[in-house]
Figure 1: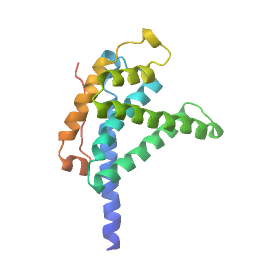
Figure 2: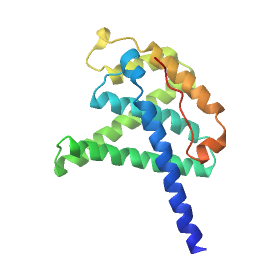
Figure 3: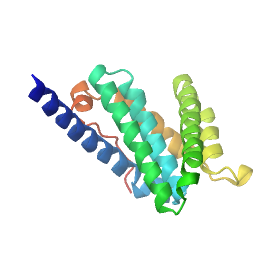
Figure 4: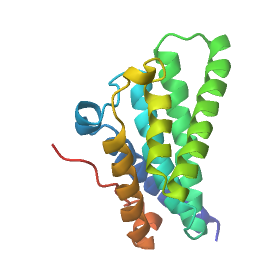
Length: 179
């Protein structure tokens, strides 16, 4: 019985690592940065990974318990990566908690605003939220976010159609733009 518990934990870690790798690879797709006006900066990459994770978590919210557990482990891995990245950028130990709190607040704020627009099928609202988050300094001069917003609606629809076994085995993929 005890040995089965440890094997289950090891298998779950493998599933989480595989799924997290698939999600981060999707967020690194060059077309987001080249064609959809996501800034190719540290914060731009945080934003894109946040978008990918938000779409994935919205799908796993409909999953069985195992899918939700995997999603929770993935969010934990995401924030561990963010912590590691902050330290690599030279932020000292005393400044890390403050930055982590700000980034977590940013993430959960985006989750709320994107979810509201996605639930309402509000393309203009989603575009406005994307401009606000991806190009906060540019205001009226910000590039259009319509293509990214449309991609998000399409990706969410495709995730909803994905079989539960893909979630449970850490094989859920997000179709990314080509080009």
